[in-house]
Amino acid sequence: MILVMACFIGIYIYAVYRFTSKAAFYSRDLNITIAGMPVIVAAIMIAMQSNLIVSLGMVGALSIVRFRNAVKNPLDLLYLFWTISAGIICGVGLWILALGLCIIMTVLLLVLGAVPASKALSILVLGADSDNVDWIEVRELIKKYTKYHKQKSRSIKGNETEIIYEIRTGQEEELVKALQKYTQIERINFLSHDGEYRI
Image 1 (spheres, rainbow, N blue to C red):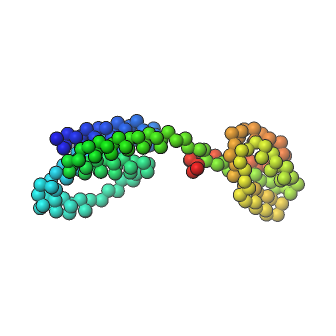
Image 2 (cartoon, rainbow, N blue to C red):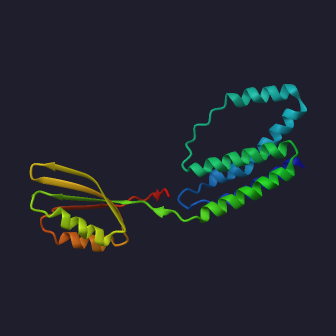
Image 3 (cartoon, one colour):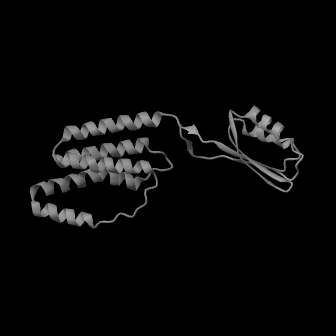
């Protein structure tokens, strides 16, 4: 009965992982591992409860195991700990606690997954080989097309000037086209980060 319940919970976590994981990070092999882990851990717990010698042998065997497979997504660690915990809980016969853990974890993952992630700030790098650029006017232009802007650095070497701005905007094309009208600005680099912004 313990193994059947552990198998049921493993299949449930398998379905939750397949539904909630992002397509770029989904691993079928990892998901199958997640489904089988509670059954294995529950069987180990049953064996450890039944015989002291077996439990000492399993502790010794498990202590020398080394897992070197790199985890690509930190969220996968959560699922691995979830499956191990569910297997241990099932192994000691606390099925209601295991089911409660599954319900709470599912609700938690769905709620936190529904929270929108803000787009990370972009980097605007402007370079000019002439000191005739009116940088105050350029800053006002950047302010017009951005929701947020902050000058991060300014480096000057002879007549060469390079300024880096940290900006947030939804009008990238319009901003770049407006900056191209300044013929003195010879280099315009717009770098967009594909990560998430921490609120």
